[in-house]
Amino acid sequence: MARNAPPAPTPRDTAVNAPHSAPDAIRRIRLSSVRLPLAVPVSDAKVLTGRQRPMTEVALLFAEMATEDGHEGLGFSYSKRAGGPGQFAHAEEVAPDLLGEDPSDIGRLWTKLVWSGASVGRSGLATQAIAAFDVALWDLKARRAGLPLAKLLGAHRDSVRCYNTSGGFLHTPLDQVLDNASAALEAGIGGVKIKVGHPDRREDLRRLTAVREHLGEDAALMADANQQWDRPTARRMGRALEEFGLVWLEEPLDAYDAQGHAALAASLDTPVATGEMLVSVAEHAELIRTGAADVLQPDAPRIGGITPFLKLAALAEHQHLPLAPHFAMEIHLHLAAAYPYEPWVEHFDWLEPLFEERMEIRDGRMLVPRRPGLGVTLSGRAREWTVAERELGHA
Image (cartoon, rainbow, N blue to C red; front, side, top):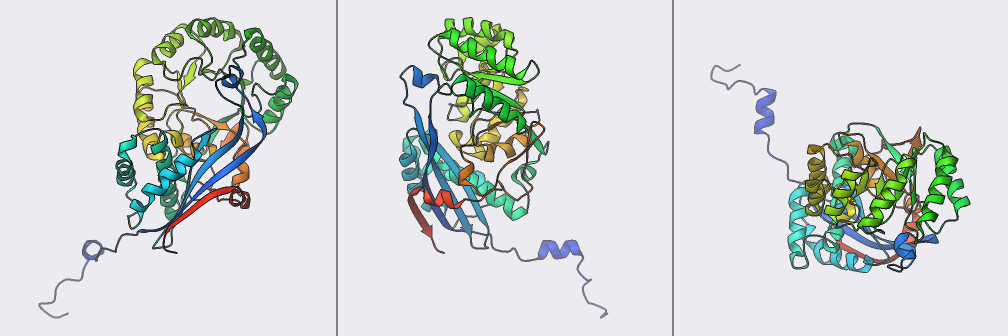
């Protein structure tokens, strides 16, 4: 070695002094508005009281992203009965602001998209459209890392307790409800939720009695009133339902009646669950502040995606609240697996035709996929049900 030659670089020196590679960039976004038909029109308590019409389809907004380095991500949001065209239109308007951006900067990009459409607000339809992009960015990040999303977030478990809802709607005859409940448990699902809120409360009690007797005392059973009752009715029904040993009583009151839910939760042994209809972290924070929910039920697509969901989960964890995220199990399975306290995830088979893969269920639990990202890809049926499409960027 020459006398005045510099010392050979150490691995650390090499890493520090190496030129920085250029960040990856979003080069293409494909938006799809999909109309998923339901085999049977669906009715809950809001239909029986004339507030809503039976639900015949679910509108979904899909966002597919690709980057300069060849990474891809898939995200979705949804709406029921109305709102699908509005979500798609808003997504079309703000999507160009993502082109050329580094997909790793998810928090910054969420804020950028919110401010792109700030004049229409920072919740509701606007952020539900943003949710499709946000989920796609998280899916892309996990795929690039070669990890399931739950592992990227930091999983506490590899499977999550799950319960079925789709077999217990009010339009379903009781005999069929019982058959559906048995089929769910035989398929390995861990619990069953049925709808209540008939105009005649005796019908609710008759159906719940039959389901409890059919399943036995040890089966996990939930009841969902879908915001049907006023405060006095909720108190009376809450007391009447205590005998059924419910895991929770869901949405007994208007979704925005935090004070009423708090008073009811304090008066009942049965846990009160709510939150699915709220569309922002701030609204859920009010539930937490008032003690309105024994079980919090946020919906990531409704509150703007995974980024705000994680903020909400931190608030819920601080108050030691159980979570039972609403709908969209393909997303919520990963988020529930990353929550410290043992959660539940809702099994709905409605969206299954949209994806090539199926969630695996065993011994009452839904297993986190080992595939990278969300672990799902769009099916040919999803393409067939597409009613509007827009591609931005370059192939």
